[in-house]
Length: 447
Ligand code: HEM
Image (cartoon, rainbow, N blue to C red; front, side, top):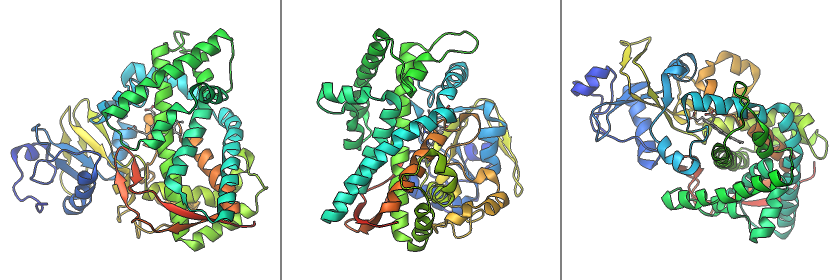
């Protein structure tokens, strides 16, 4: 890395923000992950980085006021940015990728599907999945078997999202195919073009479930039926089948790895912090034997453990936007930064969540950061694992309920002891994962 630049290149001068002299392509990979931290240290909280093939620098923002400007107060000026074309190979034009009027119409139609009342119903299904997992782990604890936590969280999160979409049609699909065709998302951890093609081939199963439901005039209480029934408020038209399938695939991908990764890190952090684990045990031991949706209010420490896990390991660690028209980022120190139209903007929950200016001892796991008093004292735009503003994650409540119910039940009866086979390292791809599987030895515990 070169030091802070005394005489910036002409392109950097035009954008009026400091940054490295070397050209660099920001990506979701180890190289970018390794560079961004030191660059933010060296140049401050708004830095210009010029890609190899373009003369126009991109901006990396690491200040809560600028995050607010891009995602909330001036969000209309920022479209989805670079990198989303790769996501589109998997997801077509689902709402994580789309923009403009099409996104607005789709989001309006899908929003009611994620209503609290629906999630409360789906919580029963989450409980059943967790009960099964508990039985398996209790058996493994008795047998003294070590588990691959990373793989298990991936499989569990996938099952929950598939059941939320397809209810019992998932069992019918597994019976017909002899296996669950979607498990390729658990087994194949690469996210390359080959996987994209195999994943897109799964759309035929979604189309066939939709067709069966139509033929049988069958409506289930799940995301798929609700999306088949939803209508645009203005035109009263349903989604096209193509749009519906893209949204189903979007929900699977957006909902699976994010939740799986968070639970993977949460269990790991608990295994390394016995006192925090003990506070969690006191909380879950006071709950009914099988905590459900109505018990979530009593799971406040559990919620804070999840919030803090998402601070340290936000699954979506880097994402992008593109400025539609020019804009200005004001700064308390130094001159304002002019943003030309078309500038690529990068935001990183990971680096802002670990910025020592906003978080004392940023690398320490401390769920108390999320008690009411501490939240009130902080700038609210310094924490954004689910993004912010109108494009905030639509599945936030669903995943929080899912993760709270999981930890609420499982930590009541099981403690996981880390078995250090390989180093625990971050793998910063599209999602921030653990590079190697985290292995754990389950122990039975009595509440
Ligand atoms: C720990 C769990 C999760 C995290 C950290 C997370 C994070 C995020 C983030 C950061 C975005 C914004 C991306 C951007 O604007 O570029 C997003 C969008 C989205 N998420 Fe999540 N997500 C999680 C779980 C879920 C679940 C469970 C679902 C579905 C059931 C879901 C569905 C979506 C969808 C559809 C969008 C696009 C929303 C839009 O643009 O209108 N996510 N998520």
